[in-house]
Length: 160
Length: 67
Image (cartoon, rainbow over all chains, first blue to last red; front, side, top):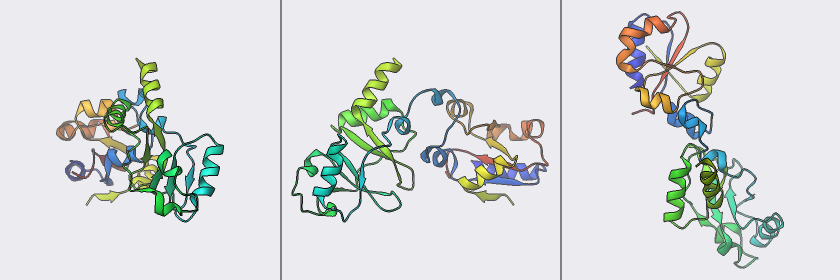
């Protein structure tokens, strides 16, 4: 739709016309702000906990577990140096052999969600799939934070 | 010929005074639009563009995605 609009503007005499081809999806997936009626409601990116612990592929589970539990978490997101999500450790993985490397025990390629998804949609998905938490990422896979089902439920109760 | 532009280019040009235009229908614009975006639905471009936009300043149009 935007290419047609851009071409028409040029034929109407507009001198410098640009087409943001990736559009609103790209903008919102990057977690950038929007205006409008939906902007008043919290979304996945707003509620995702940005302080979720992260670790690299080559660390040992024992080191990561000690660091994570000291902060009261039972989940860790495995990321690259560029913060691209590579895997996830939940309580079950954290309880495995402490000498193992993270890449051997993590859940590879976890489902991730974009920051603009509504909390209503998130809660349905998380309840249906029995997920306590899910990573929220930008469209290029970089970690925004970890969304906890209990946070979503509490926020939706508050917004009622 | 219109030039394709990416997210960082949009932010830069808007900061420099470009006009940002969403061409989607009303319900979609009302729910969510980029900060400061002007609404000119595709089918209203012929009748409205010259009234609401300055033809001498850069214009960036966008819709939902590349489709």
